[in-house]
Each structure stands twice: as structure tokens, then as C-alpha cells.
Length: 328
Image (cartoon, rainbow, N blue to C red):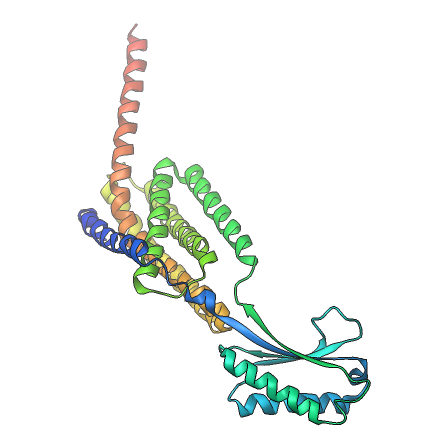
């Protein structure tokens, strides 16, 4: 940002207005793309009793029947566990097979029927003391941990704003609050416009993440602004102070945003569920970078100019009263 950068504020306001208005219209007409809530981890369980628990050969035979049926029907097992069953009975273990891709109901029924028929046809597995039970499970990829995340993010954003107000003054806090609200709405608007699959329960989390990133990146700018004003020789105008602070802070803001994006990108590789949760957060990081590098500094010039003018008036009144008191 050069010394005339504050004149770019109408441009950034126009960009934000277009995105937010388009997002609000799509939210009203189409809502959000909640297809992520339909994503599930399909699991097949073959539960067996104590007789099979004590016979490794029977376990191997049961495992082979299941895996052969999966392969024959084009299913790929992403995970397998052999341990305590999910049922309420005692002395029962099970094979639990996980599939990350959505398995159609018809395929589930076909696979289960084939497995049960092969078990029934096997003399060892259909013995008098052998009891095997098969069932499909559907596990949604969302969890109650989202509530904890939302609370933690909200608390973090509020604490950061309070710190900005105490450490850097009400002006920085007002601009930071404005940017946090802007980035929250901006992020949700982009998600709505791009039709990005999201969990309904995580919309507040995505907005909160955007607000938190916004405040943290704005904090970097405020630190540099405070240092710039403190080390200046004489009083700087609002334009000069913000311009110099931006020149010293933009690299650190960009680096911080890039590191956050890389971390979220790395987490997205972990699994389909994590990817669906973290990818929309990248929109929040992008919104925070946009506001902290472009919109925020342009806006803060006006905020700082107004507060500086108010401060000078109060100072002039105080000096005048002091002078009058001295003369009297």
C-alpha cells in the first residue's frame, strides 16, 4: 500500500459487497450445500461367539469369506478391526470392516446375503456351538467435538479482540471487530456461492475460524502500527502511519496465512472426513488475508484519522483549560 492506498477503500468495499450480496442471495434461494452430512463411513460387522474366539482357524475362515464377498462385489476395505463386538452380549468378538466410499443399499444386501449363505454352507462355521451374526453400520463423519471447537474458537476470537483493545487502543479493536464480522459473512458467502460441501453443524465453526484468523492477522498489523507510531520522529498522519505499518507487516501477515493454509492442507490429506471439515476453513484463511492486507488498512486510516482528530480536540480543550487556570 502506497500513501494513496487509502483511496482504494471503495474498491475493496465493492468487492466485499458483491461477494456478500451474492452469497446472501444464494443462501436465501438455495441454502448451503449440505451434501457432506450425507457422507458416511459404511461398516460391516461379523460378530462371533466364544467358540470362534478360541479357534483361530475359524476366525481365518470367517475373515476369508467376508473379504472374498467384498472383493467379488467391487468393495475396497479401508480398515479392519478384530476385537470386542459392538453388541451387548458377553464373550463376543467381531471383525469390523470399514469402507470410506458410500456403499449402495442393494450392494449391502447382496454382500450380506452371500456371506450368510457361505457361512450356512460351511460345516465348521455352522456348528452346534458356533454363533455368527452379521450387520451393516453407518457412521456419520461429524462428531460432538464440533461443539467444543466452536466454543473454543469463539472464546479465542473474543479474547484476542479484548487484547487488541487493551494493548493497541479502541481504534484497532473497532477495525478488528469490523473485519472479524466481515470475514465471517464473507467466508459463508463464498461457501454458498461455490457450493462447497459442508456439515450443517459446522457452519458456525467455519465462521468462527474466519473471525479468529482475522483477529490474529490484524493483531500482527496492530503490533507493527504501534511500533511505527512509537518510533516516529514527530506525529505521523493517519495515512503515513498506516502506510508505514503496512509496509512492515504485510510479509508477516502473508507468511502467517500461508503457514495456516499449509497446516490445514496437510490435515485435509489425513482422511475424507477431515478434508471435508478443513477445506472450507481455507476460505476463512483467504478472507482473513484479504481483509488484513487490503480492506483493513484502508478502513483503519479513516478510523485512526477520526480518533486522532477527536484526541487532538480533547487535548486542545485540556491545554486551554490549563492555560486559563494558570492565567487566573
